[in-house]
Image (cartoon, rainbow over all chains, first blue to last red; front, side, top):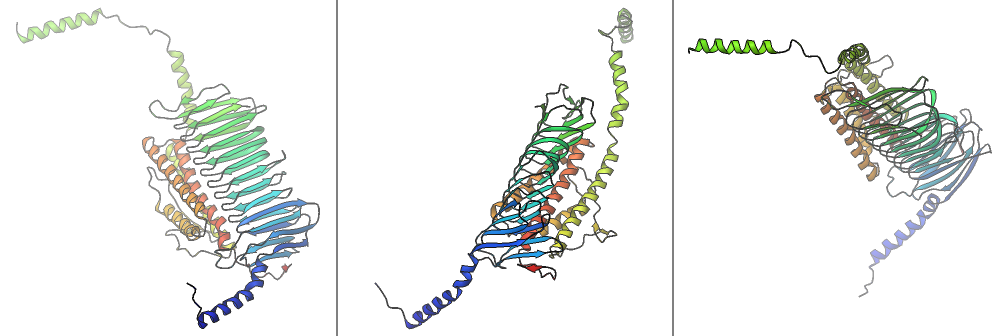
Length: 306
Length: 210
């Protein structure tokens, strides 16, 4: 049965429609595409902050920073600022105080290839290609994918995964996750990582320093030791697998309380105590001054030549 | 036959049996090389493993430094973000030259942690808890389970240390697990500070809006 609306209801409906029309420009502005550009120093710094969505950064050969993409519905604004003296370009997605129901923002940013890059996100994924400067990439639950060119790279997440493809050039790579997995290939130099339950899988060239720690995630490292390499891996209940390429010249100090030790280099592990658990393995391979330390509580340890 | 005579007879038989035994038994193989090798190894082993008290003292020093640095890092991060968390001062904390509080901590065996270490952990946790509500639910759940994982690991190592007090491997792993827990708390606090920092930053005279 169809009933006629009362005058009060009709009046309220009219007011609501007017209010909605008045709000239309603001809503359209929030959902509008982004297309901004500014001159930038070829070796300047670019800082990007986005809460949710994605940040894709590509290095190019122009001395300009360009932003494209789409601002999420409900976003307050996009801050795009420059500090000439500090050679700093800042891109920041600003959310309203009550940010519930705000759509994701996707940023596609082009920066001078030699830029130093800093990206902060919460759930946004971060993808970086062709940026040759130092990178500092942080996201809470988003994933991080980047390329290493020899400059320092620091990636930090809570649950997001990290993936780095290197160029074989030496640099410093630091990865910290809580539960996120991390993979890195063709990296070299110094490689540090820390996780609680994430799985680390690294393929490296010549490595001079590496310190990897985990609580329950497995650590797998394949690489070549520099002559004075310092390798230090620790795990509580996860396994550690170390595959060494090329000539190996180092002192090995390996011990575990409850895990097994498998060694392809020859010497066998011995019990640390006749009446208590614990195994250790100490031996020297080659004549170099490298040092390899691996310690676990329950995790198995594998040492092999690849 | 009286009891004295019976005892004398048994003594004579025992004497005779003892005299019938060979004066010595040669070992099946020469044991001296093995004993000599172990004697030579003994000083090496002793120097490789310093006394347990020294390791514990060293561990305590490292833990104090580590926890102080991590707390300083967290507090610096918050200051930089302009969102300094209001937290109660830690009892017994000593302000350093730069105003950063240092937290004495001890390396307690069998799961007993220094109360001030617990206070530092509580401080970091309380800052984090205020931010965790704004994290995605799945991330929050993962974070909570991983913090629990770290605490389980510490409990397990402590239990093993109770069985093997002074074990250098266990002491090293325990120290690093405590450090890891503080590092995770500080790291997540720093990462999630961007949540509290999502509002517009204050104006900068040298900055130009594009």
